[in-house]
View 1 (cartoon, rainbow, N blue to C red):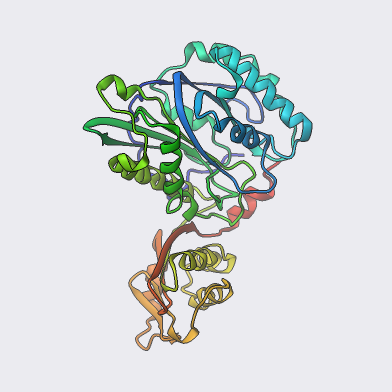
View 2: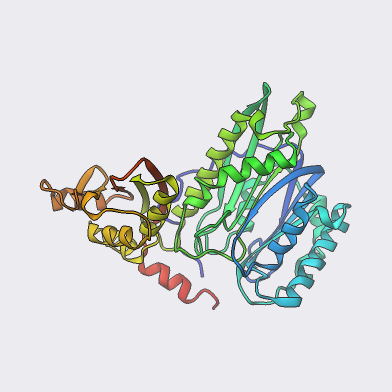
Length: 411
């Protein structure tokens, strides 16, 4: 079942440059979808440094377990991603599917199994027939090419209505490096140390420990600050690879994250770009919502309150109905379990302050507030008046279409 492209989709895709040291290919394996690519192979011709963050779900998928185990090597030669089946809650057969895929990929690329990374997305609980794509990996390796980012993003989509790509450049020790990323995700999105699936590659030469540090810091204000429906996926995987090809242009290897502030800034901007694209493709979404909480006792407290607002079905349905119902925001602040003082609370929709000092703003105008709610971008601001803690998170509205998409997801 396909859905119209989200009205919040980007108007155009960036030109995705080639990143030296990585090649990609896709194939149609017919795992769930007919007449579309559903397998992606990413190959690193020289071992790349690798970093990753994964779901904190206590019911992770078999590929997440597999990647976590291999991450200790710090090296990657290939990534295999399939869409249509999450290979989660699939027991022994799930582990057998990852073993078959990894073995096939290692033979296709000519590397050891601990240099392979796997990710799967789609239906949970359905056994994955890895034989469908295990046999095509050798052929895919033969035709893999560098100029293939948009096609790669298309192959990993599930209920997404558009492929998600982003690119940035940075300078590391005076040498220009490129960072490219792809992501997929539209539902079951409340990342917890990661997102649904996202793969970011740079040609910079960065040691694995430094790369992990950079990624760990980057996800907090980006992928861990977005929510579509408060549900954390079993399969959330975000991986960052550094091919090291920039060393051929004189870049000195980065051993500590602190040695590459320019790279960190570019990476963080790219992660936020991809995270925003995921929210803008929230299933059935018509509005992008930015929730900013200030005046909290700490940044952590502000973030928990912001997520309480962003995850509230009542807040999200009010936004879908273009109703400036700030009472629902008060409710979400109150239930967050964080310090708040009802009589100090101020709430704004856009630039229109609707409540102040714990009651309706004396200058409140229903017409002005309603005008803000009719836009595609809805800023919700809450000041608690208690301290200096602040946080911003992003979400989308909750529409009838979200229920329709998820009501017939398996059919």
